[in-house]
Length: 258
Image (cartoon, rainbow, N blue to C red; front, side):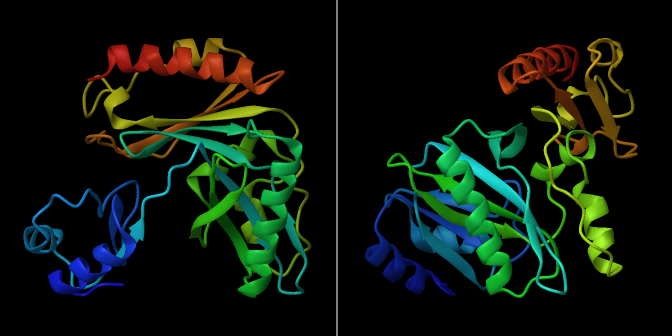
């Protein structure tokens, strides 16, 4: 944790480059982050960062980002959903591929670690635990989201119990629901740049024609920039089939967007 340009310089000398400077609060979707190579004017970087406290982390080369939604009840019972493989576009979650395309051993390990994190925090509710999958096959926890999470939206259509129902069950003191994955699925985020105009919605006909895609819109009136406007879940016989269809719809939406 650094609180001045001088502390940033000392931390960078200790950690080395490249490194990532992050705001200590309110950062999301790549906002409040800057990659440092060591060639920057750190006084200028700190002045432009506009915060009185930040976190400097070593840059981690990773192969994939995974996430696990985990739900823990007040009685200590805990369940984990199948890990998602997350890909990003402009630092914003683009697609979540479930189950993640890693070995069965890594899938199982990610679920175990997520449950251990929830237990260690004595957490009650639904939580997203994100991992870096490293080139040597190991997992590194890189972030926790103590709430329903974007990478868990696939649970609405592809799991026995959605992340939202799971949260309500736990808050109400009800038994937790099954996290069972009923179908391979790809979740596609629908961002504002897929809208032809801020007030003009896309033509959803191709998505509805898919037959196994489910559209969820968030009721936001203006599609500003790359605002998250909704998502679509594509069920398939396997993740490659679902991913191919999701990517085709995404390409069509981006062509007609702005």
